Amino acid sequence: MFTIIANWKMNGSFEMAVDYADALAEFYEANPPSSKVVICPPAPYLVLMDGPFAIGGQNCHSAEKGAFTGEVAAPLLADCGCEYVLLGHSERRAAGETDQEIDQKAKAAQLAGLKTIVCVGEKEGEDFARVVERQLEFVDYADFVAYEPVWAIGTGKTPTADEIEQRHNFIIDKTSKPVIYGGSVNSENAEDISKIAGVSGLLVGGASLDVENFIEMIKSVENMQ
Ligand code: PGA
Image (cartoon, rainbow, N blue to C red; front, side):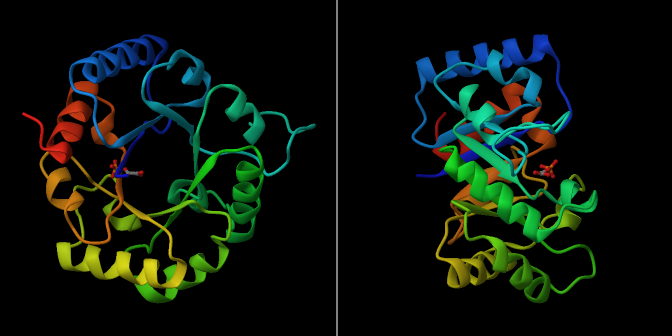
């Protein structure tokens, strides 16, 4: 099933979470999408986002519980209704998260019953194959791999369709896992990217913050009017 994920990052508000969930629920009532839609708001808003769509965390800790002030364990996410968790986002890797830590987090998340989306991708000027091949050594517990070229995140730049196809196939060859594309996906390019061979889903950051815009993206992928 095609998977469309909204990653709010550290944005939003109580009011936005409530309104977003209402608008999406209304959309589902009128046009139930065949894609799996997953909303990843900041952790404090997860429980506000009950609805026909799925919710996911943006990170979790590798321990099941314990004295880790400020952290969120995978079982806590599951308890709040999460079905998914994003792991190893480049913004977290940039803050020092290692491949090994990401692997341990994914293991803990699967144990808690969550589906794990492990993000990989090269930075500007880095060699895709060399960087991503190393990152892929640590995706044993990934249900999905998200390919997000770091230089495409929040920049409005995307790889060409051929590059996306080749890179997704590279990851599929190495892992046999479904690969989701992320990096400057918006309502203009979502449909085209969704049709590229080897693309099993979209991970949307900035363009997911406006619910109407996000719904437009779902509709374009679903070929709805
Ligand atoms: P973007 O972010 O859609 O704003 O480029 C994607 C992501 O970081 O997951």
